[in-house]
Length: 263
Length: 272
Image (cartoon, rainbow over all chains, first blue to last red; front, side):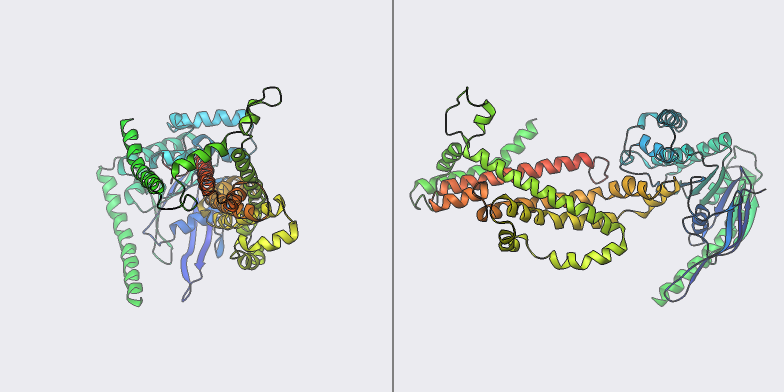
């Protein structure tokens, strides 16, 4: 049975002149342990869908079920990693990682041991007592990942987590994410607008259309890991998905021109 | 080190020049010493004001008590005491009210009209009423200072809570935080930069109000002393008192600023 079931989900944002249909007729089933990327240009509703699964913003109609239960609010069974990191800046690295475990009322010894383990896993041991402002973007995102791993969510929701990082840091973190995913068997729903990133990471890529957001293509990626971004198969898939995304990107651009003309 | 010394010397040029011109003008006898006492006379007066009147009697008092028995130390302590008590009362009331008004739209809607009506009234305008309500002595003074500190802390606390970035709230909820944890461990720390800015303004206002209130309602403190000196035409003492007020204000502001830097050591705006 699928772990995440999205059924006929629509999301409408009421607007001043006309309502914006961000999502329409989304049907999606994600199995336990699957790595799924939501791919599309900005404005295609991929983050809206992720936020709905996270429980931050419920769908206007349709339903989202996780392990059979309808999602009504955010919860630690679906750990979220944000593009802006969203670390608590007034807490040190260790305190940030501890926060979720404290909410789970774990013992102090247990929390301390888990922090040590995660700091080691994400190569953060030297930064334990630093504040987020003293860390680079890549380091901050490692802390954010450690913070959700700490609460043992079976599902990780990631909203363009590596979007703000430079290419090298990005590849580095992608590899670590794959390692963590393989080691802990998490289900990952990962939003990105990078075609290459989605092919590098995912078991399955869900390409979305621009407004209203619908599923345009549900593409399984069967290339063996570690994937070689220079290989012919990789690039063939990249070209194919590139065409799909470009169509939507052009609709997006045309829409923006129309809006600009009205202004 | 050499750079620091150089910066210090550069900074000293203008004040030394001003002192020299002032001393020369005063000595030339262009003005009566009542209008313009010489800086050297001010310094002598300041020393007399600072030091104890009696020689130290080892049997009857400790050295510290003796050292602080001069007129100036006791005035400074009196003023500082009023500032701190008044500020504690004002900020102590403003902080919880501000947190509530910032967090709850209903409480904000309820309280904001009254706050907006009262806020523009300067604390000084409450002096007559303060005397009618509290008589003379410390109570009216503390009341006025509390009033002066109340509004800056209140307004900044409200703004601080309202400006908490929603992403922290989402992250905390996602990690399983309930309402109370959200408030104490996310909203409160996230709004401290604003709150502390309000504290600094509030302390500044409190310091202005203490001087004015001492001129009216009490008979010690730095504000009282410079007004008293005027009655005797002791201009040198007036200036000595003013300088003391300036130094005390500077010390207070530095202390608050240090405290802020420590409490906000996590804050991105304060790289050090």
